[in-house]
Length: 388
Image (cartoon, rainbow, N blue to C red; front, side, top):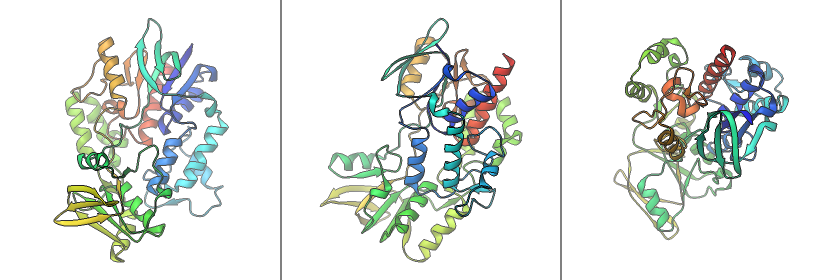
C-alpha cells in the first residue's frame, strides 16, 4: 500500500511529490502521482505553448524545486538569450521549462507517476481506495491537486458547434495553436492575458488580422492578485476569518480576472496602433455558422471570421466536482456553499484526505491555483509531517 497518492501531475502535483520525497523523506515506492497525461507537466507545456506565453507572470522564486533560489542559480547557466523580464524578475518560459525537466530528472519524479484518471474515492478503515480507469489504487493519504475545472464555453459557442461550426478553446486537450491556419480573420473571445498572448502569437505567425472581443477595456495588473496575498499582509485576516462564505467573497474580490501584465499590454498596444489587432469591446449577441465562416454580431458590428478561438477561462466549479460531491455525501465531509471542501489550516478535509490547488483555496487564499499556492501547500504538508 502507498503512503501517499497525489491526484494530478501538473505543476502543483509534481512539486508536492518532490516535497514528500525529499523534504519529508517518504520512500519512492510509497509515493505515486496519478495523472491522465503521458508525461509530467504535459498539460502545462501544451497550454503555455498554445497561448504563446514567452515569460511567466510569476517571479523567479516560484518553481518546482525546493530551494527558492534554485531557478536563479539555474539561470546563470542558461545560454539561450534573455533569462527574465522586469518587473519582479519573471523568468523566460523556455528556461523555466528546462529547469522543470532538470528537477524532475534529477530527483526521479517521473518514476513516481502512474498514468490514469481518478473516477471515485472511498474512505476505508485505514486507507483511501481510489477507483481509476486502470484499476484501484490504495493509499494511506491522498492529496487532490486536480488543477482547473473544464474550459468554459458561452452558450452561443455550443449552438454554433451543434450547427456544424468549429469553435476552438485555448485549453482544450486536443487544441494546437501551431496547427491553425492564420490567413483571413481570427476572432479571439476573452479579455485576459491568454487572449492577448494568443492574438500576438497569431500575428507573429503571419496572421492577417486579429480581433479580440471582450466585455470590458483591457485591464492591466502585474499579477492576478495583489502580492500582499503571498504573505501576512492580507493572509492574516483571511486565515482568522472562520466563515467560508466570507472567505469566498474575499477570494473573488482579490482576483484580477481577465487582466494582463504591463509588458503584454504594451505589445498588444503596438499591434493595435499598427492596425493588425483590434480590441472590440462588447459581447457576442448572435453567432451562426454559414458557408464555412463564423458570422458574429458584436456591438452593432457584423464579423465574418475564418476561425474563432475562446480564451474564456474555466468553468466556475470545483475541479473533479462529481467525484468530490459523491465523496462528501458518502462520508459526510464538509462542503462550503460554493461546493469546495472545508479543510483545516493544514489542508486536511479528513485525516486521510488533503487538498491543494483550486480545491484548497478556502485555506490557501486567492493564490491557491498559482505556483505560489503549490509552494504554500507544500510548506503546510511538510510542517504537518514533521510534527507527526
